[in-house]
Length: 215
Image 1 (cartoon, helix red, strand yellow):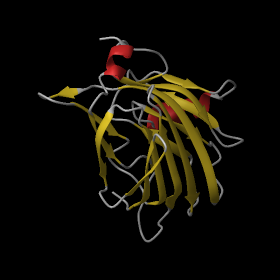
Image 2 (tube, helix red, strand yellow; image 1 turned 30 degrees about the vertical axis):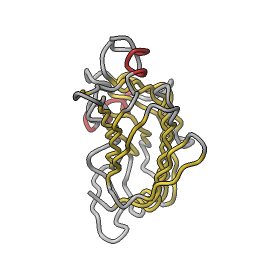
Image 3 (cartoon, rainbow, N blue to C red; image 1 turned 135 degrees about the horizontal axis):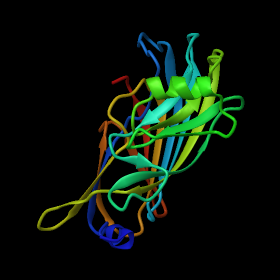
């Protein structure tokens, strides 16, 4: 089924937002804990482009990874089937971006040293992308931004095509969450998780805001 056909089947779609997203190496939650996402913004366009912005606050020393993994296949090329295609990533100064794709292959910044590549190969999950600092992050806030092309699997019943946009399954606490979904007339109903997210509209955008506790 072509990408164009998949996106057209978003007519009368039931879109499920499973709000969560990222983890960090060796997170232990207690109050704010060793890390917290102070702001998470996701913008999902009708053509399948997804932009994610994570602002992390690191409260403990020794953290080298800011990362985000998917349960769906993640790659930097078109696989020809349902997937998340990484288009670009913006990482903090002095760090290396990296991707471990759905086959375990690693892609990373130009000039990355062999020791960093070896560490990533040991600790990264398949279907993961992020920012690696071989010297560990200082305490403070850091922002990582991702751009993807989402080619989703669709489920059907007699009336609707169902699209489950599962942004992740496990995550550290999120203080501020904002998810924007472009609706050009194809979306019938959205069921956010957690259900406490507040929904508003701005022209052809559905906007969900709130927070998400550690999972």
